[in-house]
Amino acid sequence: MNPTGAATVFIIDDDASVRESIQGLLRSVGLKSECYATPQEFLGAQHPNGPSCLVLDVRLPGVSGLDVQQQLAEAGVLFPIIFITGHGDIPMTVRAMKSGAVEFLTKPFREQDLLDAIQQALDLDRAARKRQGDLAVLRQRYDLLTAREREVMGLVVSGLLNKQVASELGTSEVTVKMHRGQVMRKMQAGSLAELVRMAEKLNLPPRR
Image (tube, rainbow, N blue to C red; front, side):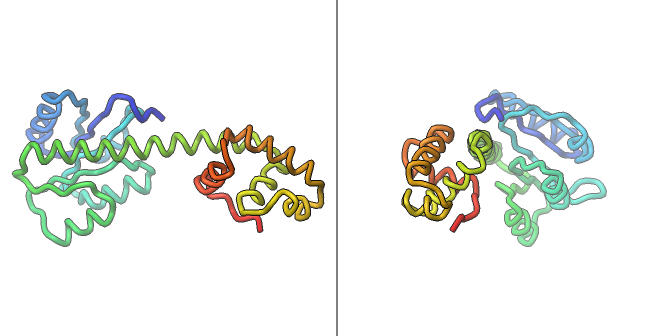
């Protein structure tokens, strides 16, 4: 993941003039963009691995942008989406927002409104990518633990004292202290509270 890399705005609209207009606006503020006439073109392309968002027309030939939103989610493409339309209505807006859209702009919209929505979407994607990157690092650390160290970690973060963990595992308190020290070192946790937060992020099952 590269949460701090160059951002890219993807534009899907069957109207070439709209694509060119938005691309020109983004170029004027130093934002990189890629344009596609159809969702199929977008899905078939290789995309830069950096903060991204999608400006998507609601009404595309033969398919609704809302259906495209669902297709992208099913394909694991989770870029924040900004919808644009010349024929918006309240039910359509509600459906788009409930499905996670960042904004729903009706043409003609103010250029600044689009830029504000894009900035918000890119900030959301940067935050999401950072969370994913942090979680990947935690998983790598957790994978370094032995089976017994994982057992000890699970019991410790559930609130048991060393002697209770020893009783639970049928071992000595000294051995538990040794395993616990290894867990803290390998997970790079500075305190029990930090280890508990790590376990929560990893969504580890309770061991009690």
